[in-house]
Length: 173
Image (cartoon, rainbow, N blue to C red; front, side, top):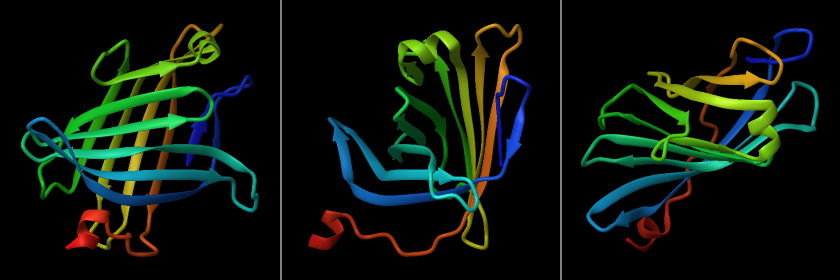
């Protein structure tokens, strides 16, 4: 379910999301070790083939600190990194990014920055006993000409349809 800004007011619509996750080898930054999933998500409206939204990035987890990071890039000229905490046995977590932050920030192309300034982005992820997982996200936008910020929200529940391909290190072992 997507609630997005329109000139005549908020519009709520249903969408179909496809989310492909692939593990990659652990990444190191000196003593820091990150376990990663590379992802591509694309979204379309039910019954239509035209892509409504496309996004790529990484889900990263650092066991030593319990830090979870989510990076994203969208082809409208925006990138972001949200950060939060989760233990290895967590059944959910929340991540946040804010405009202007150097460690969990949001960067936009000049048009988006001018007309649809992204102030804040939060995503809550939950893992369910039936093997599904869901997210609920809120992107706070300051839209040109509107006094109050707009909460662009999205939520979805995803079901695994195939096993992941092992990362190259796992294949070698």
